[in-house]
Amino acid sequence: MSRKITFLTLFLWLMAVPFPVIAQQKADTTCIFRFVPQKDMFYVPWKGNDTELARLLEYIENNKATILDGKLPLLVDGYCKSQGSEVKNLATAKIRANRVKSELIIRAKIKEENFITHNHATEGDFVTVRLTVPVKETAVTDAEAEARLAAEPTVAGRRERQKAEAAAQQNTLTDTPSETKITTDNHLSLRANLLRWATLTPDLGLEWRICPSWGIAVNGSWTSWSWSDKDRRYALWEVTPEVRYYMGEKKAWYLGAMFKTGQFNYKLSETGKQGDLMGGGITAGYQLRLNKALTLDFNLGLGYLNVDFEKYEVIDGVRVRRGNETKDWCGPINAGVTLVWKLF
Image 1 (cartoon, rainbow, N blue to C red):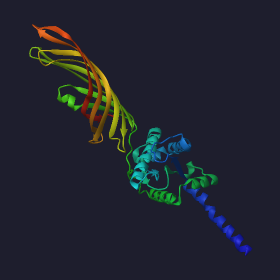
Image 2: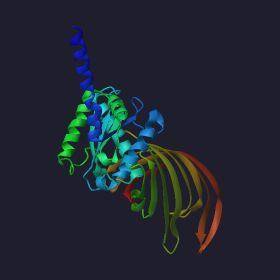
Image 3: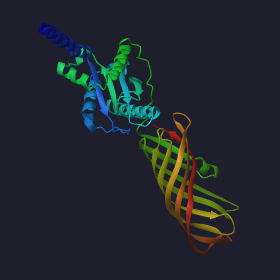
Image 4: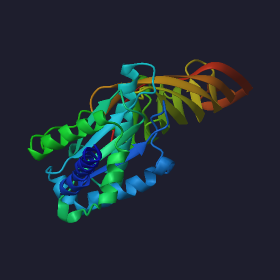
């Protein structure tokens, strides 16, 4: 009986030995990035994410030419199980994977086409990035291989990555596009309020998306019209800066805070009005994407506006002042159907 126990112990020990050897032969690099439960924001310094990111960037730099040629895809798996339903888990896993890919695209200067992405409503709250590099460029010790194996989330997770690796080794995944599209962290767009243009008031602006959730926009309007031998006049200029917070998975709805200032000169009847305006308030809107470059932005602003102006009449070509007035207005102060063109 003692011999049987000894033989069984020796057999089990020998069965455990090949695992680090296999890891060393395959030269797999798997980096795990942790996420806060129910959240999709990628915190780089949190839970050792900075260390994993630095290690992964080093491997990417050493194999950058092969990666950019499409011969060595990065296998990205997003995981989430802390939401209330499978649909929400998959949506959060997708955003998490995109956050990690965005960081790699910016830091390592690689492309979306260099990723193979899968999302899972199981396992936990993390994203894994796997890279199968040549043995000559990666020396994995037995201890490191055992640590990597222990860090794998579950047996099911390891099976998923083994399947992806086998497909990559057969060169069947080289031309396969990623299942998810990355959301660009920041971009610059040109804006034109079509409602303003419809009233013969040229309007142009810019918006800088600092990140998917925050943007800074500014629009300016200017016009100067006169008719009836200059007895009628319509002229103004306005500048409207705004800070926006985009919400939802697609970041289409938003709330914002705006400020408005400008001057005007209206004479549409016998009495003209010329003065200054200033105010601000909150804005809300929705962006309808038309294609990769164009978007329609529907928005409405509510708030307070102070108008200080003087009245005048024109008698024999001479402007005659008829007094001053100051008015305060609470309610709609801005509206737009704005065409947005993404520049870069």
